[in-house]
Amino acid sequence: MAAVLALLSAVAYGAGDFLGGMAARRLPPAAVVLRGNAVGLVGLVLAVPLVGDAELLGRDAAIGAAGGIVGGIGLLLLYRGLARGTMSVVAPITAVLSAVVPVLWGLATGERPAAVALVGVPLALVAIALLAREPVDDDDRTTGLSRADLLTALGAGLGFGLFFVSLDATSDDAGLWPVVFGRTASVVLFALVAVTTASARAAGRSVPMALVVGCGLLDAGANALFLLATQRGLLTLVAVLGALYPASTLLLARVVLGERLARPQLGGVVLAGVAVVLVTAG
Image (cartoon, rainbow, N blue to C red; front, side, top):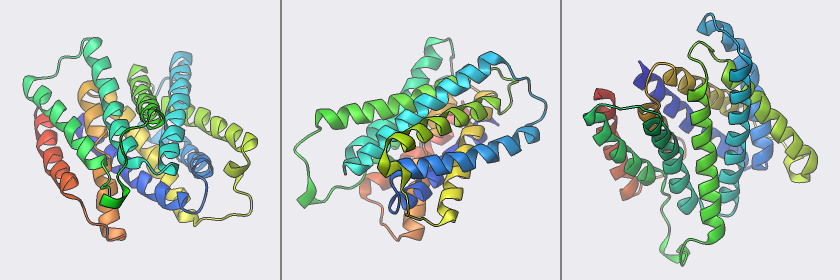
């Protein structure tokens, strides 16, 4: 059940990223995130009773809020990489590190997946890197990885990874409350960004509400699914499955926008399939 929830979270994360990217073509990324997070928060609050009885503890609320803040910072850094036009460099590092951090945390805290699953983990990490890698035209190649790009990628991946760790650190009987408090903290963070940054307010600019609503609900739903997965399975395995989100982004880009997959991305799809089988078998 944990593997299914983790894979569903990956699908939702990837679809939410796709819609968010479409919306960010018309609005500043911070404005998209603020509006999407606000919509997602409403959805999470309405979904809390659907999960069943849950015990809200101050510790879980604090951990969830802290996770929401670091996750929000990671999202800001990721969009900064997108704005700089260096996603082919930033995205793979971010995606892999978002899985490596919780995997290392899980192993350090005593999780011991089955041997077959441990074989699938490194395969999944390679697949994530291939899936997230954007093809670079011959005329648009850079001379290397700049320090700013590296720090942006590492910061974004670390933020996402710590967010996943924080969800796992909450109580198993906390229900969806940790992601509710995490989303609340994230909304407050981006509201402050909007207040202090003129471009983030995006006054007088519009974007189809379907994109913002879809992005917000999918990302919030992905957080909820990931939390439920960690309450039922090992973080070491849930994290790598959840980090396969670039696959659904690529699929939507192929179907909706007609974008073609590069050979490395096709290889990533195949490798991801193998890794999923191995991890779920463990």
